[in-house]
Amino acid sequence: MKARAFLDCLGADFFAGVPDSQLRALCDRLICDYGTDPHRHVIAANEGNCVAVAAGYHMATGKIPVVYMQNSGEGNIVNPVASLLNDRVYAIPMIFVIGWRGEPGVHDEPQHIYQGEVTIKLLEDLGIASYVIDASTTEKDVLEKLREWKDILDAGKQVAFVVRKGALESDCTVKYRNGYGISREEAIAHIAAAAGGDVIVSTTGKASRELFEIRERTGTSHASDFLTVGSMGHSSSIALGIALQKPNTRVWCIDGDGAMLMHMGSMAVIGAERPANLVHIVIDNGAHETVGGMPTVSEKLDLAAIARACGYPRTACADNLASLDRELQLARGAAELTFLAVKCSLGARADLGRPTTSALHNKQCFMEYLKSL
Image (cartoon, rainbow, N blue to C red; front, side, top):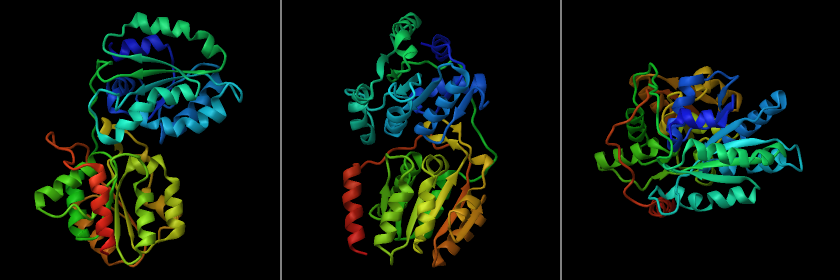
């Protein structure tokens, strides 16, 4: 089914979401039609944020909003669904569109496997009626399901379309770009070189994939790296936990702007604890680039100022390799918590691979390395 046809079936005029590669056709269509017009389309920080924004829309208009997400975001919606939307609380109707990563029987990355297995069950446990869309689903099927769900929505309950891989087809092309010159992979290579044998915790998505390939290319050990392949937004908290327990070891966190924004409250905790051995670096390309390139709100923010307000004593920005190298050397020599925002371009190598070792193997080797420090 074409993405535009699916949206026409939904009949909604407000959408909030967090991008997902499995919903790329839908996400691109929303950008083509609405851009980031906040009256029609909000790309939120996390999935719970989407639900709350959509709830506000419903209360202001009486209409039913659509919230889109990857199934990994189900965990972020549990609280607002159970304690805000539920028909025994405020009875707020909502239509969810959920990309089904890790569907049983479909090959996927390890961080998606268990989430894929429990995707439908989690919806059932939350009292959300669901319908699976695949490549054979027609517009008639979707409209019939919505008619069947009318009483459910009228009662202030929620429903979900769970979208299988390849179910939605693209019908528009979006070119995502910015004006920065450093590639993310270049920036990570310079960070890895500056860190030497220090500990690195890298965020989910292409950043961790690039770090792994940089190690392969340079013949350096992976042992000091923890690749956070799932749990988007939590790499800085993992790094904090390590830094607090290993105060004599410098810990570098390679974060992303989308991941940082997803759970930005963690920066307040980091700033309050002020571990002198932690360097928090945000690779800021203003986009959810790993899942397609839809924009984040980072272009409207001063990330270094946010870090200062959270209590980071040292903050800086870099937008070229010379300034990046200078700031990395200063961070390496500093004896205080440091934040560095690195402005990077969008895009990655077409042949970018994935780690060839398992997540469990990564954790075990990393723990052995930490023991040696």
